[in-house]
Amino acid sequence: MPTVNPLLPTQRDPWFEPGPAWWRITCRFVDGAGTALARVDTAAAVRLAGLAGGLGHASGLLGPSPKAVSAVFPDLGREAATSVSRAIASLRFQNRLATALFVRGDLSRLAAIVRDDPGVERIRVLAAQRQPAIITTWHVGATFGVSAAFRRAGLDVLFVRNLPLDDERARARGLALALDHLRQGRLIIATPDGPGGSSTGPVSCLNRIVAFRRGPFMLARVTGAPVLPATARWESDGRLAVELHQPLPCPAGMHQRAFEDALAADAARWLDAYVRERPREIWSYTLANLLGAPLGPGRK
Amino acid sequence: MAGTDPEQEIASIVRSLLREVAPGPCHGRELGDDLELGGSGLGLDSVSMVDLLLRCQETLAIPFLEDLLGQPALTLGSLLTSVRAARHG
Picture (cartoon, rainbow over the protein chains, first blue to last red):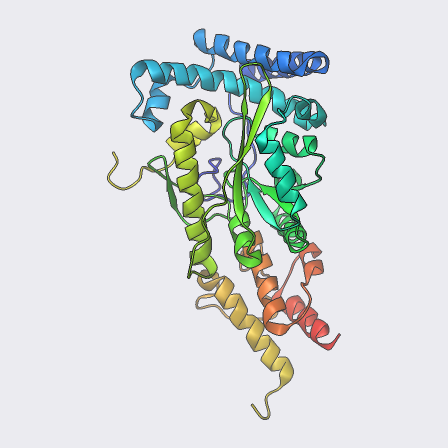
């Protein structure tokens, strides 16, 4: 049965925006006002979106709750869980604005607020090597910041999630296109915790048993391309800081699905460590999906 | 092996590659030429579909048969036809 939780094995899942009518109306208003302000001052619009998210949380209208945060991060104290839940609510509106800009083709506005820091420089160096690599983005932090960083670096990169992936054949064509890019020594960006598509075997992340999308791991297996996680986060001044992390270790002595599942398990360990260190960067959507996934062995 | 029909040999290789890619769906099933590989047939997902074409490419030394991914319904028979054409081309 199809599920709307992309951290579980999925089939042809739609992206969905949960919530009642008032929430959808609020979102439309925020999108409109935010993108209008962003045309004048994008960083200010991001700061304002963060404030709006924080206010929404303080008024009890916008989740997640501290209880939900504590369920995924049980080591956080009560105060810390409250602070993290407020930060996640702020992040929610900031990313809503980024998504609206992205969908409306205004990626250059996001690119303009990316810091020229070592993360962008590492992306330039990686592209200049003319070696294939699979950059993975995740639903943490300012996800669209990674695309913006590539734009800032002046690099044209295949972002698999932007391809039309309506059905299995379209997905297969997208995968073939990504394969072609990698064989030409180019970079691609994929999002293993996105909806739809084929799933890896079960992996453990944040004490939950989850699954990722299989495509990036299969591409790594057949091309030998390294998998490098990339993240972006909103700074307090409304700008974007991007980080390109070290490649995931390549599973040795494994073949076929065992290779893919071992690499997916490495990715899960990386994501686990990243988010435990920065719980404020987890998306509300990802938090909800983790809560909807089965607990790992020995957890109740 | 002397006397082996090359066409039959290709069909046999492709069927065995298909079983490697999708052991579960292929188990106990007759892999006839009219079997649809995706959707309501064998139900191969996108990754398995591409994996199958890659294995055909590597094992049979043919180009990657990307055009097949644009067909409305990919059957084992149409895959075999394309593989044979690529071998002879």
